[in-house]
Image 1 (tube, rainbow over the protein chains, first blue to last red):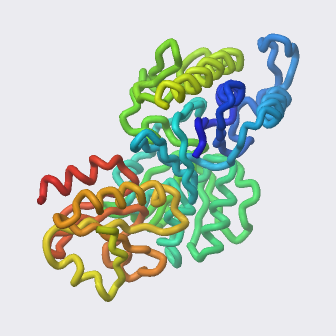
Image 2: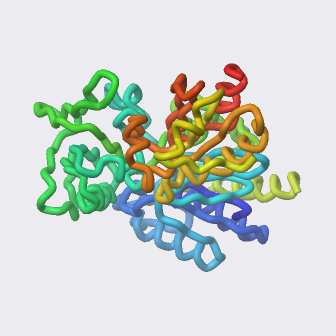
Image 3: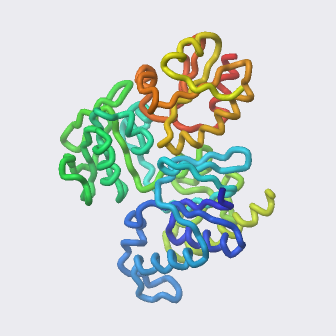
Length: 282
Length: 104
């Protein structure tokens, strides 16, 4: 059990995490593949105070090293759900579960638009977790929609356990097994009546019983049912508190401007308030 | 009453009378681990009123197939052995108690 779980390993999440550590509390940062972090790819930043002409990758590496030196624990993975129960937040991260007493959401901007047919078939062939549901599709045709950087590895794993995999993505499939057919397409539709029967990908239709949609991270409202939003951003007050007690948010997921300084500042407040919240509940 | 671990052989007899709630799960699934304490809690709260059971889909693929489980956790509700509702994915405890309370 951690004092605080931070979802997202960008500037906001790491800033919140070091603040929690500065208050002597334990903290776990759960984040996806580094390559999915938009800062990682930013070529030049000139408006972060004290770091003129720095690459996003360099800044991110400094942030990560700082967090490690302060005893921040890290875990790579995709958080699928967060559920509050009896004063504890339960987080599912792929095939594992973590627990914390407070949560800071720092997921960045999540494109929450679903594909046609996706929501209707959730649990009826559409899955967001290859490690959870893969075994149920052994020997069957499945499509993996690869939007996260680690999606090719998940597709490889599904192939290895015996699924008949087709990989679909608008992005290059780095590391995909050569015996998995790859379809380059961005316009997708999940087909079928009660259950999934296929995936339309651009001009082709892939017959399949399962569609694994692997995004870099889940939309906040799906992570935490009942979380209040403002447009597509998480609603927060001046303390970075969300509508759910014990849950704070910081960075791009709370709104514009999508800048490192703003994320770091909000993370500082969120981490501070999360640590204060722990004192209040104990 | 503790949770009953159901297998292919004992399943039909166990759920034949009254209301049952059965959690299809597996050890490789994080959301299933989240749901486990909820089910434990409800097994105690509904003792004598409803049967709360678990099916490990890894050990019992026939049961998983029979109920068309395509995503775990899936919680199936039965009345006298017949399914009348199901919840797919992990949900807050109220999602399960609402179904039980409305049918008891």
